[in-house]
Image 1 (spheres, rainbow over the protein chains, first blue to last red):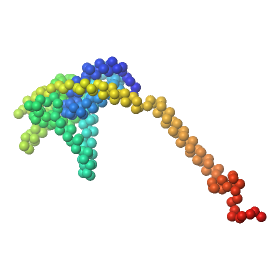
Image 2 (tube, rainbow over the protein chains, first blue to last red):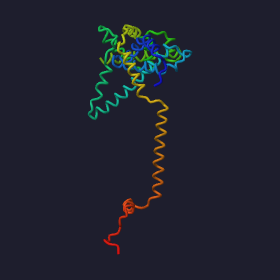
Image 3 (cartoon, rainbow over the protein chains, first blue to last red):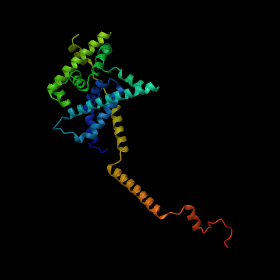
Image 4 (tube, each protein chain N blue to C red):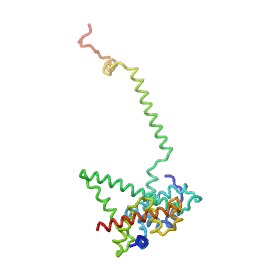
Length: 183
Length: 91
């Protein structure tokens, strides 16, 4: 690996963005251990690809947001694939699929005890949405970003963000009704 | 309850501090990465050397096939001047 930035620059970027990256990752995975692994990979990618960042195309913050979102979605896709594989293996008699299932049900550490049930249920429903809808909702409603910034991070138009949020709301409503109906 | 009100509740999620050991863990992993990956020049040299060795082996095999038709036992016997007949004495 060829170092593309000096240690002081990396340290400055780390200190400035660690909280942003770590908290965004937690919204996707709700688990400290997974969040630490993903955050680690995000900062290694930043270090490796720093030279490829063009400030005229996107600000450093937007670029880091994009790397983080992509890393989270990759992680979730891999976990899904491993879960499927684990299920097939467990049918044969191996127990390796169990820890993966447990990780999915962990509680976001930023949720207070009194809101735990309601918010974690809502967050897990958000995480069941398609990737783009989920990202738009996390950025707009949890991170509280304006739609213009969400559009920049996702590299789409503001109209597309509006449409994604609308579809996400409809999907969530359906899922919530389904959940209430099954109680 | 209205979906908008429900979604507003997501703002209640508090910010969490990243563990302080994470920075050192990242630096450690980056150092490991530098140790593990060989530079491109080394990899190309290694690939070229491997191809040369394989080609050399193939050439030697092809050449030796054309030259030697006698069995190895016969070669040993003739080089040590041993008789290859079953007779005890040459008359």
